[in-house]
Length: 212
Image 1 (cartoon, rainbow, N blue to C red):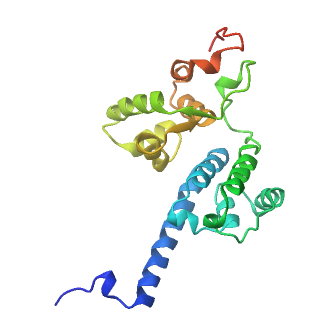
Image 2 (cartoon, one colour):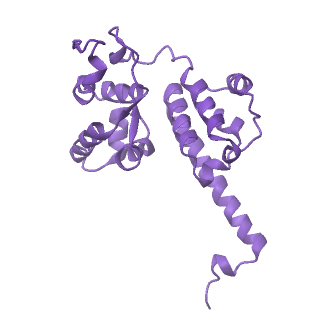
Image 3 (cartoon, rainbow, N blue to C red):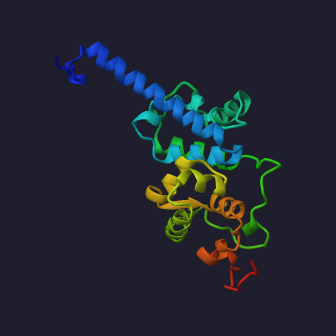
């Protein structure tokens, strides 16, 4: 007896299979965001807004905004009110401009009181870019991964983040937010590497170096 493939199943059952798989992946995304701190969770949402895949695109905007730890209904509604976007719209239906506006409002959120102070902010400098080339950080990350015997979970714990985010840094992302990189390096005990990887963060407008 042969087992029926997905294509052999009646169309309503195929649709049900797709819907169930989508719900499972959305639940996995929610669990990932709940493991992150409030600020890291918002930054992860910004990444999802930037490149929504088929599954993320099916999430309603209000649902996605409430997924990060510490993001309640009132805070999500405040962001939606400012952006004039309905909570019931699906992410895939938003324009690029609308997604950019949501990202801007999320990035302006308050930092939690227990968040470590970002070392790159301790000196007065010119306005810094929000995103950095991830190449030097990724190269270092692969070296450190070998020290953890290739175990991304242990490396994620050492960096104070989720394993899925470490995977993204290693194989997917082309940029990294400066605050995210700083917190990860501080968590693993190497805040000095921020100046080594991106020395431009420690320069004044006239090019003078700032002591890290």
